[in-house]
Length: 598
Image (tube, rainbow, N blue to C red; front, side, top):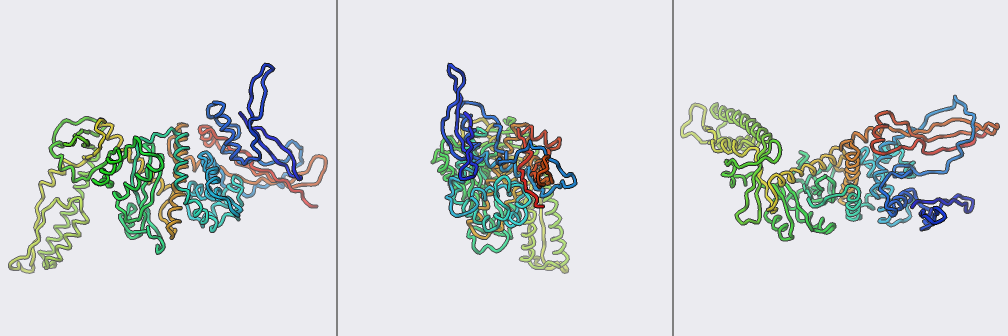
């Protein structure tokens, strides 16, 4: 099947209509027939019908002659007309960033977000669709993360999105961008469901294993109108600022499936049941294995999962290792991967399995950390003792406070010494209290035994130790997702003051991250690795610009000013990159002719 164009003039204006046609064979040869009349179509709809036609024919997915990455076609003047050009009049004007926004707009359309939002958001009296404004917000976050004010005042005006979206720069202002956030937020769940389906089509997602973790992002400014902005444990080392917590679920490939926003003082374990219920409501609960770190673990959460028939692989608190001290000394370990040994220990009830793992690299790191903190703590104790002997420290309570601060600063070695502070029955010169300490040998022996060890817990009782370990360490995919959203997409700090705007900001960052992972998956398929920032920066060097010139026809007609809106030619490196991705940037976006009044 294919699209057929029909052109006619109505009320003096040209109109283009489309029909879906198919070819078939007859005894007299190949014939064509109309399957459906489609009427006037937008450029996005044309691409969608072309893909549908290929699918109905059973043809493999291939890049059509006109792709999602091509700008909309416009009626151009005849280009076979010979012209006399005044060479001294040729100028290059109005250069704009093209390559990165062209790529992002193609990804947006590839995921079907343009048509989805057009269907979800009821049209009103607005002159620019909210779908287009949502695309601008997300593409800006993807290409050059910044504030809505920067988008309106600077960024949008120096990009070629005006050509791709048909939205003039004066129509992009902060009021409209903020309103777009308000229009986008109510459709969070529908967006997540759609993206789960579309990403599944693109990458054949396996959703049996789900990775869940929580991060935080802090605010700047006065947060009087945002009840979810609270102080709590900060992953950004900003305990002085209010924050929100974000729980994110990804597949084992790092593809995001959904997220939830929690108040900044919410403990990780308090988010688990809400997240599981939200995800099961959207996608169902069958055959899910949840992987979570030890901050999520509580007996209530594990019971909640078991009662729902859920399966889990979770970390456990370090203190729980003491219950397995005997197993740590035994030699029945097997290698899970280079430098990591594991062993399975069934629970007494038989409904769970504990996995002991020890890493040689982690052991060296933890021993080095303990040694560093022990040396610092001992040096601090010597200063405390010297102050007491010199008579500068005379009160037990004051000495106890100084010792508490010292132990807090060196908490990894806080049990390395047994410290005693006592008042002397009779002063020794100026000394009135005595500070003594001795090494805790039991702590040193336990450190030598347990450093570098992990204890995992699972109700998968028929899975081998190496597989359990490898599934658990895939939690690094969630950590990478948080790192990308914070460092590459700049989700922090949040400057919005209202709760709905905060949530909408996080939704835009989520959509930008989906674009990021879509490009990463595409790059892996093309053998280009999975670091999108390199591709984005390389393609950002593709610019669009207006080549203006004065010309007249060979027959001596009046002079006119011709403007050719062109795209720069890719250099060798860009050409190779585009070829690997299967992309061909347009050479020209538009031609405009204006007669010069003499």
